[in-house]
Length: 225
Image (cartoon, rainbow, N blue to C red; front, side, top):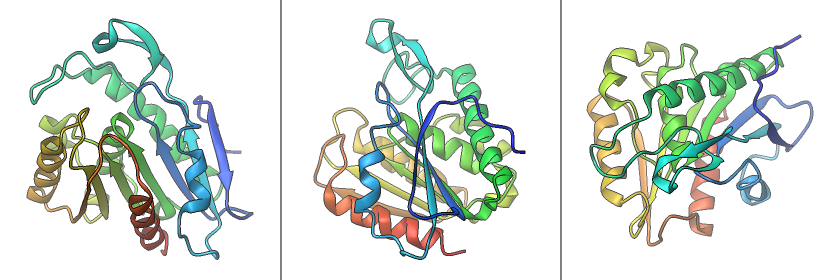
């Protein structure tokens, strides 16, 4: 019996028994239902039996939003290049996501058939967890995201995922996570030797149909192991 992660979630399977998994983390203030409708629109190989896991972040007060309680993977205290990171919150949620990975492995899915994906805050966390994961993963998808705990990544990154495929996408007119934040993340990852498939789209802080096609193609490549 695998240990079940304490995170509540939505699950969608494209076939049973599932032999691959995508753990997809939502953005600030959303929940696991946010990306659930995207699954039928992803151009995946019909032979891939994929379990999509969309966890709900725990509710917590968010300083940037006047302390309102909402679903968030960690607190956001301020914006800007040198924003005050909630390191404790990031690491706490990273542990919860790591438990989700362990749960899928316990259910019979190899780590190298598991992709971490996320949007905005969820994408930042997905990157942080994937690059530090001790087991080789299939890939990581970071949408409209940025780098957290960048100061410790070089020391904490996992040799097992030194060659992990990274798909990173961003809107050129994003008012929430500026394009420069995505570009700096891309450059930081490439400087550490990661291969980053970088895409931009003429949009804001959102996901568009042409991006969905590219996400699906990236997932399909990652899940071919």
